[in-house]
Length: 102
Image 1: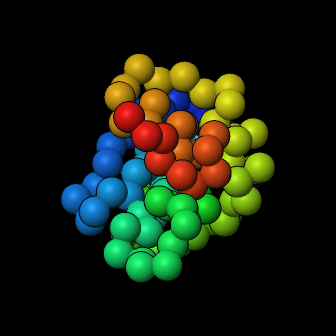
Image 2: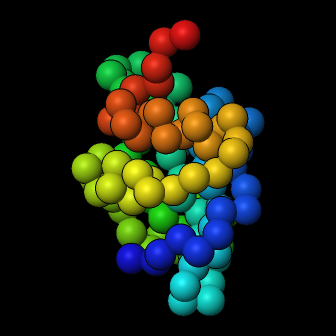
Image 3: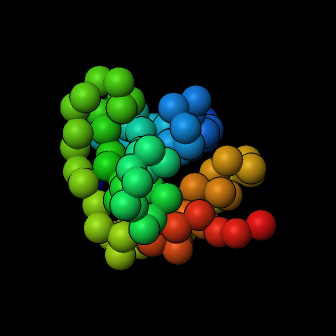
């Protein structure tokens, strides 16, 4: 699994609420940690699918690793990035795919 060296972007996407953050890795590549929204799935109990790490970006369609919620919690736990969307993404991971109520 790639190791985060530097996070350089985090955002919410205009597809209805997917989240992602991009990071440089110790292997010399960059990756995207992506949480796909379930906003358009009528029977979904979570707001997001479990995360997937993609080489370069979700748009590359080169999935490196699909994570369980437990693995995702471990992956994001040591990370720090001053960004509102990153904080929201971490909250979703901590709540196992459920967006916290405001």
